[in-house]
Amino acid sequence: MTTATVTTATTYRPVHASVIDREAAHFGRMAAEWWDPKGSSAMLHRLNPVRLSYIRQRVDSHWDLDDQSFQALRGRRVLDVGCGAGLLAEPLARLGAHVTAIDAAGESISVARDHAARRGLAIDYRVGGVEAAAGERFDLVTSMEVIEHVADPAAFVRGLADAVAPGGVLVMSTPNRTWLTRLALVEGAERTGIIPRGTHDWDKFLTPDELATMVRDAGLEVIDTTGLTLSASGFALGQSRALDYFLTARRGSDTSSGEVVTVTLPNPATLGDATIS
Image (cartoon, rainbow, N blue to C red; front, side, top):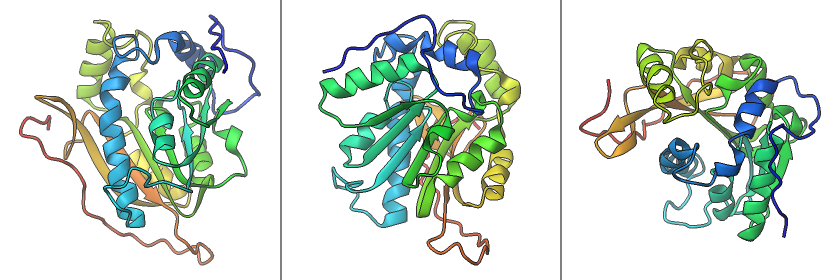
């Protein structure tokens, strides 16, 4: 069994172009509380069930999986970039996946390794940016609320896309750059302490069209964009993308022709009666 060592400075890692040191240090300082549902990462704990629901819908649809299976990802390779202390990586491992998870904050990876070891989960945790998986291919690549924290978003997306195997899927989420996110996330949640101050730079948020263009330029096919909204019971999937959104893209099984085909799949959003529009 390993023991987490959390310090006030990010532990050693290789130089990775996607990583902004101050961003890594900011999240590293929150590492000790990452698994506390009432701590500084409380918002992530509330978001996680919706994230998992969306990912499950997308992979079930893409690979025609049994949506009742508890091991739907058995035998598949999964990469989670910007994993923090493993809130998403652990459920993906429980679904049977061989999970590789990367984060720029060494403190977060230390906590993640300790937490997974105490639960008997074998997850390949690495310190660094997307570059830590360079040259490897995965069936599913996820990166949730990360792209707004990287040095070069387009290069980061290319790194994620390069990691998607033929026939594989990329799932991302990020806040939209709207008046609502400026008001709710930066002016509201950070100033009131719901989210730690300094977590977001509104100018680095991407619109769905901007992110979709980056993904297409990286050689993937965008197949779904779904909003993350607020409802009477908390976060939910919905039509409005004004607050936050998920994007799914895929790489074709045969990419030799270079032909890009646009395919629209049904939107999996669960429409609430109190969503923000």
